[in-house]
Length: 251
Ligand code: HH2
Image 1 (cartoon, rainbow, N blue to C red):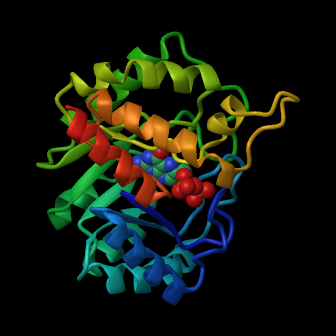
Image 2 (cartoon, rainbow, N blue to C red; image 1 turned 90 degrees about the vertical axis):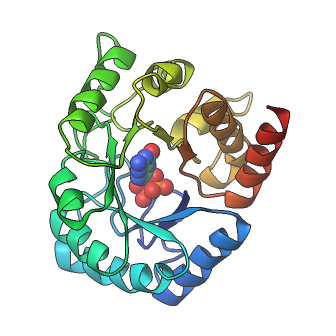
């Protein structure tokens, strides 16, 4: 799944694809590089992000969904029912739902649905994330949402970085097999996230910038797939596809 943020403020590609024509060109480039799904988003969910209103989000995403959907499966990355509905009408067939609340919208359109786990909301989620047992709690939440959705196609996603410390993210990645064992296909998004910047910080402790997190992103995507994840959400499609092919050959 290639990431296409049509936003001015996403943490790693904000502003790069804000122009719809540039966004479509980049989406088609990711398809040429091997993406099976392009995930179009019009609202940043980075920690501390301000919410976007419905009209603005629709203005950002609809032309891009419409232009890309004849060429590739398009997912709509949104927390808003109105945006998901309009994007499904414009040709998207998967709702990528970081709020895990839009199953009825996907069901009404006969679309697929990704239920992602988040503790809190983007404005405050990194203030003091806390769990007794992060793996068990995330698993229980996702199974409850997925099993009550009444949909044929449901993906579950641990929501790396969404109300999670570095330790929580690493625990979820280490124990991905427990999500895979639920039987629902697992989607994982580590791409360029802040915890990778911390893990690859300089000896002086300066975290790597988002564009310098590509190797760590590919490594964690490869790890996730090796643990049984069925899809990875990435900004850097070409190197990830190369790693996935290598993994396939090694199996
Ligand atoms: N991560 C982001 C956004 N959407 N969806 C799923 N299913 N899983 C994720 O891990 C996930 C997601 C955050 O990354 P990005 O879109 O690059 O940044 P921003 O939210 O700043 O636009």
